[in-house]
Image 1 (cartoon, rainbow, N blue to C red):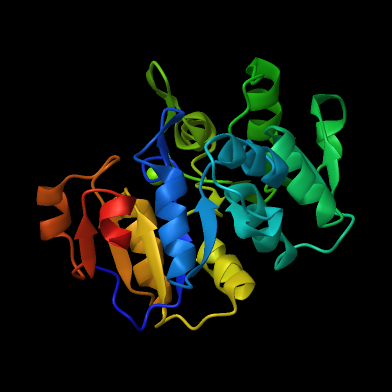
Image 2: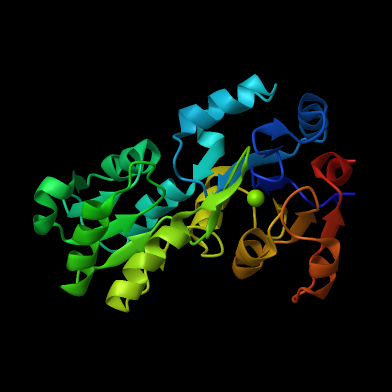
Amino acid sequence: MIPPHIKALILDMDGVIWKADAPIGDLPATFKRIRERGLKFVFATNNGTKTQAEYQEKLAKLGVEVETNQIVTSAMGAGFLLAQKHPKGTKIFMIGEAGLRLALEERGYEILGVENAQAAEAVIIGIDREINFQKMAEATLLVRSGAPFYSTNGDTTFPTPRGEIPGSGAWFSVIVTATGVEPIIAGKPAPYLMELSLAKLGASKAETLVVGDRLETDIAAGQAVGCPTALVLSGVSTKAQAERWRPQIDLIADDLAGLVG
Ligand SMILES: [Mg+2]
């Protein structure tokens, strides 16, 4: 089903590779087929809680062997975005987990916690399973005093085996309500993850297919940078929603195995 001119894939993970940690289809067979076809690929996810090494390990457990540099997260997108706006050494108040901390430290930023938040020059928020009142209060004070405000992604929910729980977009909505300021977002549909992925692939936009399960993030991001797009119906968006989406999606498949053929 993938046209012959396509040389590379940018793959979303949740809803494409797994759903609430359970693999979607026979992943070893699907990736064998991808490799046989000579397609290069990277994974690009709005979930910035895990590091590249943690995703590599999770994929390996499902029988998919990849290099760490084949993984692009919204935390890395945040590092890429901040690097365009702030010099190394900038003090950043972070609400987030290991994946975001590592991505910002790799860019040379100094990460502040609640104890020294007042010295921060910018604020970033992602998923933080140890979020609390004081963290939200410090972020609000900083944003109200004019500190630039960023988020890893705007997803309002986050999938777990028991269902959807509040995502980064739900948490930052508290700060938006308290300040009237919207964050600059690193994740899809913003172009940063696509740009990072294309640079890793070394492929042109026209020969790189963006594959995802969510129209307003994955497909919108691919279309924003001018790549062809494919929606798989194994996750969030439905066929009826996909058929109404404009600009038109290039390919629609039941799942990744069906897309690869
Ligand atoms: Mg997804």
